[in-house]
Length: 188
Image 1 (cartoon, one colour):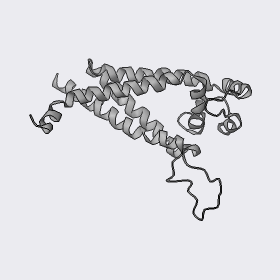
Image 2 (spheres, rainbow, N blue to C red; image 1 turned 90 degrees about the vertical axis):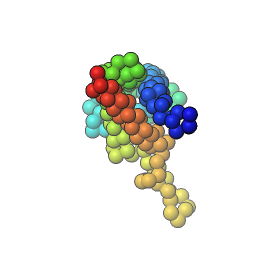
Image 3 (tube, rainbow, N blue to C red; image 1 turned 120 degrees about the vertical axis):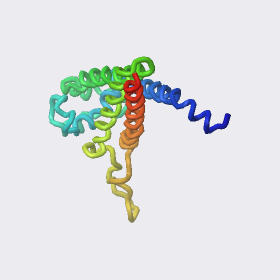
Image 4 (cartoon, rainbow, N blue to C red; image 1 turned 60 degrees about the horizontal axis):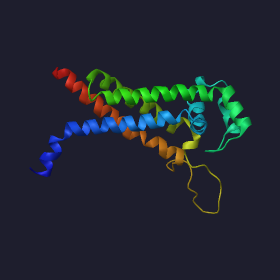
């Protein structure tokens, strides 16, 4: 059998590999939302998002004065984030993300659940991609320097921006597995 025929015959297994991959990423990232450093890390995204900022209790710009660096533990910043609703929101978001990952994985066995999981994966990724428009931290900031043409702003993605842009792949994966479930539902 040729490589092309083998690849064509494995398409259904590749859909399942995509479901497993989405589940691993969702469960891992969702699980991290239960830890202080990850909850602190999503504050700029949520605080600047017109779709999500209402989940926090304070003005969106206040977070800049209370940022913990990744892995940093500053009590006054943690206290502010506690009052802000940062951790409660992060726990709820983590639970939702884990649920979406599990629904997507269940598409291996149940087309309806997999369809819902795939569509939710794509929808969540689309919301995440809006951070490229709403969150200043996704672009390299202008810190000055001696170069005649400094590299900042669009199209220079920061670490946060590089994290966000990868959700294009997650959106495509969600749509692919949702489409597979829809096709199987139509055949039943």
